[in-house]
Image 1 (cartoon, rainbow, N blue to C red):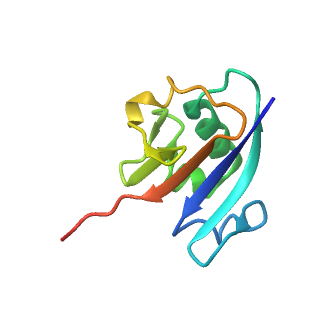
Image 2: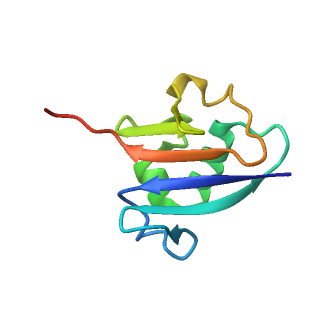
Length: 104
């Protein structure tokens, strides 16, 4: 089993406050224990099945993909949505989920 951190920026933290610890006004996080060999896509699918707001705002469980308004980092590096099922999680990894910023 591996322990990984899932961090949310800007939104959903208040809706998931019972299970996600508030780190600041704009960030919340939780430790998630995953089995050896679990990839990011599987973790996101698990969280989306557990939390309605996660499913509505972050991960589409039918399409098995991130919603288009979401950016995900893996250990502080942006990861392509196409690599979600390639990247296997290891002990101490951190997944950060942020809204996509646009405009100018």
